[in-house]
Amino acid sequence: MTLEAHVLAAYPADFPIPAALVADALAASNAEDPRVLVVLDDDPTGTQSVADLPVLTQWDVEDFTWAFSQSKPAVYVLTNTRSLDPAEAAARNGEVVRNALAAAGASADSGLRLGFVSRSDSTLRGHYPLEPDVIAATVAEAGGGKTDGVVLVPAFPDAGRLTIGGVHYMRGTGEAAGTLVPVSETEFAKDASFGFSTSVMADYVEEKSHGRFAADSVIVLDLNIIRAGSSAQDPAISAKAIADALEGATNSTPIVADIVTENDFRALALGLEEAERRGKKLLYRVGPPFVRGRIGQEVRSPLTAEESYEGNTPSNAGGLIVVGSHVGVTTRQLNVLTAEHSSARIIEIDVEKLLGTEAEAVAHLDATVDAVVGALKAGDVIVHTSRLLIKTDDPAESLRIARTVSAAVVAVVNRTLKTFPPRFVIAKGGITSSDVAAHGLEIRHAIVRGPMLPGIVSLWEPVDGPAQGIPYIVFAGNVGDDDSLAQVTRKLSNTF
Image 1 (tube, helix red, strand yellow):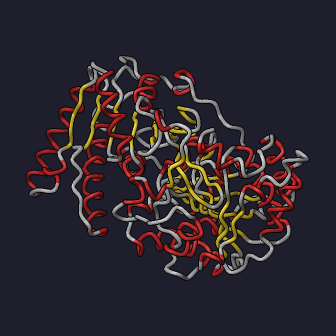
Image 2 (cartoon, rainbow, N blue to C red):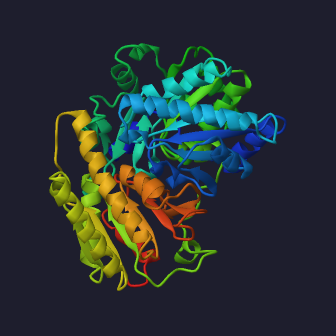
Image 3 (cartoon, rainbow, N blue to C red):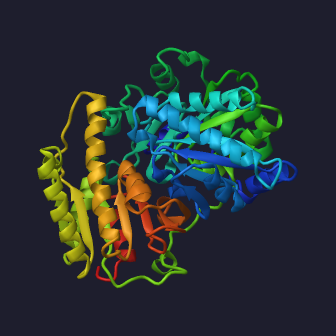
């Protein structure tokens, strides 16, 4: 018996819950009072688990008006706050919520309600509890009432992140398959800006809130509650158990949910819907797949090469693969891609030169753009930042370096796009993919079409701006196996 199986043996088995059951419950509650979930995504990788939903990289009232006109149950807003300092992140969250509420109030579909989701990293890195705090305060200021509970669901089973017994784990891979590693023992917990010391979610809440929320005040929806209907195979029993467990939530009580499977997401969605029907006001702080479960969306199969270009005519230029993330899995994926894709031109952005004199940085960028444009005429181009990570113990300095590097990547992409547009663009890394989308490709509105690999890596179709018609692939730094980047490139390339 594997460690995962041993841990799960203490809980009921999951049981099948059709996505349609959740969708029907949502439709019934929305029949007279329609609601849209506004997902504030702190980097664009939250879209990798959903399909056919609108995405905004700007959040003026008119942007929300466009998004709401798509008549979808959720809209993603790319806030990119993981790259900001706390004050900037707070200001941006408040602005997004105010503008969304203004657009909803002016909607032709009078009575449009909004729910808010703070989507963040499945390995617990981000501005917590700051972001849900700001959302709750802004909603209250706008007359939306006080938030009773903030539901934390970091689980991302597609990428091997599970929460069991209130503890957040990463699944082992390769020779370690079947093992569970507490996320606090991974490289992600040592993040320079958002590190943490515990995998026990209640303790994580206490640590991150500096004691404002004591661990024993956290409501834990463990698998005994999530799967309460297991023996009778009845989702209504689980929904009641979940809603009952939330009766005591008040004043933004933290609520942690165990999740191992897609059925668990759907059970949770039905329970949250019941709790809200009873009058609870909830916010969500979640990993990528939560929204899929919450709106009753089926798991979308990976897009084929043909579907990736559907409705558009691919160019004969090479594709552009941009790699900014420095986590271990990204470096391994880059190594596999460069080894297998022998015809691709590899161009490095030297971070040390970017952090040198202004003249040195400008000359380096000019030379990089010239090299990328020339190489795209012959085939695919892999642009990556130098793999030597320049570290600092100062979180503010760490962010400054990250921004400098990201600005250089954006400049290379934008100048290339306006000189010789590529066949496709893949951006690897959360901050990298956010900045490439909003500034490098100047995407304002897009539709996420679906995943490129099972449950991970999303394809956006830009619907306006200079990148319209060019498939844009958002590839988180911390997902996939060693061959994943090569697999996605192979689907899109005409030279690989």
